[in-house]
Length: 603
Image (cartoon, rainbow, N blue to C red; front, side):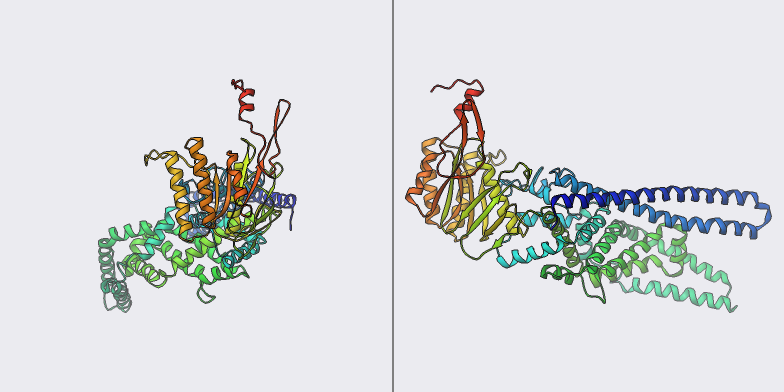
């Protein structure tokens, strides 16, 4: 297993190699550009100078300058593509170096997935700026991004499913070159996120030309007539002008379909680049050896060796590219006059759609799964000090040692343990303001979520029984729904009770129950709620300032345990250890802090 320093050195080495090659490619681009200009000028000058010499000499000059010029254009384009590739390669490795230092601003944060009503994602900062999603996200397709968000928002609760994903992540974590190649190829696509949805919609749309027997016969009929006319003209039976007149008739006839085909081409044209990107991604998956069951399944989604998905999509991309040649007036007139070429291409594209439309969603699903898995594998690779949790079927169990928050700097993060071994069981945490209660709750929640999506966790060791995670840490007013803070919290607590009464297994994390009411009412309600949790065989953690709740451990000595975060006041200084200790908090700091800030407090 590599260390953080070795991983850093690897990213630096790849980025430096990329910069070195990029410098060479840029020099080649400059030289080829200069050579193209020289050939162009030489060709023009040669034609002007030798114009009186006749067409044989002029043809020779054009051939000597034009053919190399065309070849250089193709080579130039390949160099520009390589330049784009290397720039992306350098960028993603520089991004990883920044991410190792907790700067993830270059990654999409998934703010569009924020949902204040979600069971846990809003409370745990799963989406949005500086979120878990932004920390993990390395997706290069909109499909992969959406799937990753779905995995984070709907975690697994089945032991076999979690262990299978762990196996896939372990395998991909070792494939740095594959993961980076996949991401680079995906990032080279410069289209819009909506293009992927439009592609799915296009695959389901009905065929227009292929279903019509007239359109299917027209290219064959026109081609047959033209061949017959040419043969008769060569044989001297009819004059060549007959062929010319027929050819013109076919050209003008093709104008009748131009408007409809142009609209279809506009739709197809948008798909060209994304299809080429998908073909590259699918080819990469096809060529990658897969061992774990999940990765093998992804590989099976994209076909067998006889007819690979990448080959099929590349064929569609080629057909669409050929249709784009109708924008060249010379090609448009010549080929349409011969055999209604653009109708033939449309029919071929629609034929592809009829043959493979049912396969396309599965291919896109394969890309999405590989994209999301690569993100999770990169997270695993970047954290060699993390451990894969053991998933147990013993209900309920949650044990972790030296557990920290993955988004906190590894050099500053204070690690703590957790130990829940039966059902029902609750941990009640008391402590002063800023002592670490809320951070601990989020640390437990985030690591529980990571464990249930198959990744390693920020802990020396972890064992858990996976159930639905539900939290209430950050309830807020809703002006849109005319809903108060207190009522919003009651709705969340009612949801938890309803789920428990429906025999759903939950892991509950609550911070300061019933914050929106007075102390006596809050205390009475909190005691009643926790007692109901005990009756309903629930498990979880509750953080509170109300020391009265700690007395519940006397009523339920086997089912409730008290822990605390202390604020240590020495002289006139306040310090925090952020260490979880057994027992009930002894020190509170509100009055102390008020005095420090000059606010009068009567003893």
